[in-house]
Structure formats: structure tokens, C-alpha cells
Length: 347
Image 1: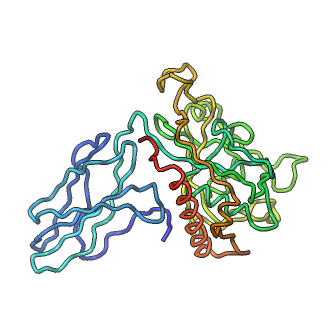
Image 2: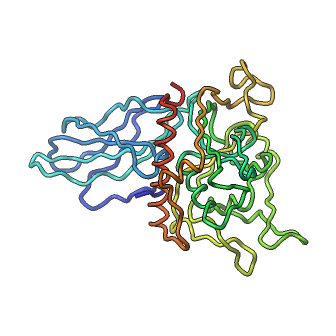
Image 3: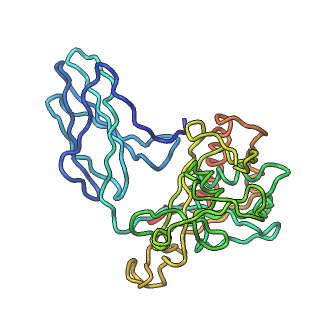
């Protein structure tokens, strides 16, 4: 099931945990583990990205001889955190449980590619693709989570008329680590109150000012942190359900993180960090950290999704129902995107 990743405790009788053996580099790392007291015939080692597809960890698995207590893992992506587990199969043929899960990160690579999705806003029945510059977007399921949440029948915030909506998948290149997230509406600035609530993040620096509408709060951001955030692509994990009302203290009401559904991440792509044509990343005085790949842009309209059995959320949907609907809609949208453009991002 879809869930945010967490560390599992070591169960009684399992072998010792995985340890890093030396320094990782961009594409590989070496690991070691502690053997159990019983004689071991073989070990099963598995690993997968901590972030990425939150519905199904993309495990890779290998078996090694029982005398081997380490492995060099190749084919990793730079700047990614991976989870590792090891399980022993004893000489008797019995297999133990997996070890405690360990997380290690590869060295940041200079340039990576990723797909992001955005639905055009504030355009009603006359929509064209939004620019990606100075806008927020999301990975596939995070943006589908947003679209599903805000296209409830009879409710259309952000000027979205879903039958006429335009959903665009972009491929972008970006360099460096992810920065603090910026809310971009209409320009990129301090992460706003509603986005922090959706992320189940700290809102203590957000306050309602005299004369503001109920529920509206303005958040403060450190000037140096804002400057750094404008130098690259920002990332924010988001959760469902979205807030649907306020309490008596004018705070948006959402379940706590451990009772919510992590659906992926939103991103910001500030114009201040966008690379001009022909300019290598990292060479502009103001910072050059991302660019859109023009040939990798795919468009789907809301009417197509409705005709293909897009599902709306029922009122007061439980987390399990939200998960099922978002999974269904994500697979539907991905299938249309992939039929329309068979090239992989960055290939």
C-alpha cells in the first residue's frame, strides 16, 4: 500500500543490520552486514530507492554465498537515498527475517532529469499549457492527488473547469540538491500557509493579520533561506486528504501525518534559476539550476480522462478510498501520456 517510508525495528532472532563499507559515490556503494550465530548457506540482499514511487518500493534482489559478508551495489542514481535489507538462509534451509532497514545516500550527481506534471489553472473553459517557469508542479501521483482533490463535482477552485482542463507532463533537467520549497502563485516566494498544512509541516511562523479573511495566514521566511531557495529546484512532500475547513481558531483542519496519505512531492522551478538557451548549468551569475527539454512535453485534456473513466472522490472519503482513487487516476493518466509520447525523460 501507499505509505511514507519509515524505519522498521529489528525483530527478535534476526541477523544484524547493514552497514556502509567505505564512502559511496554517484552510482554505487559497498555495504556489509553482521552474520547471525547459526551457520548460513546464503544471503539475500535487497535494496530500493527511499523516495520515488511511494506505492511500491522498486526492490532489486541478489543472492550471495553464506561466507560473503559484503556486496558492492552498482547501477544506483546519484543524489538518491536507498534502503537496504539482508536476510539469511541457514544451512538447514530455513530463512530468517530481513535485517533492520538501513538508509544510505549516493553522492549528488551534477545533472539529473525528472518528469513533472502540472494542470493549468485560472483558465476556465479556454486552457492552454501553463508555463513551467515560476510555477509549481508535481511528480505524477502528487499532481494527480491535487487534481483529484480539487475536481470534486460542484467545487472548482483555482479556476479549473475539469472537462476543459489541460494537464501537461514536462521533462526537466536540474542540477544540485533540492532546495526549500517555494509557493509559486503567481510568482515564487515564501512557502505559504496552505501548502505547509498540506505538507503537514510546521506553521508556527504563519500568522493572521488584522483585516485578513478568516483562515488566511501569512508566513515568514528567512531572507537568506529564500535567496538559497531561489537558486534551485524546491521539493515538498504532500499528503492527503487536503484541508476542507477551518476550526474556531481559524486554522485549517487536516489529520496528523501518521493518519494521512503521502502521495509524492511537489516542486518549484523559479525563473531566477532557469538556464538560458545554450548556457551550461551552474554558470549564470544568478544561478542556473534547471531547464525544460522542449521535445519532451505531452498534453492530455480533462475530457479525455473523463471519457476514460477518471474517478472522482466521494464525500468524506477515507484514506484507503483516497488511495484507491488516486492510484486508479494516476495509472489512467500515465497510460495516456505514455501512448502519446513513448520517449523516456532524458533519453
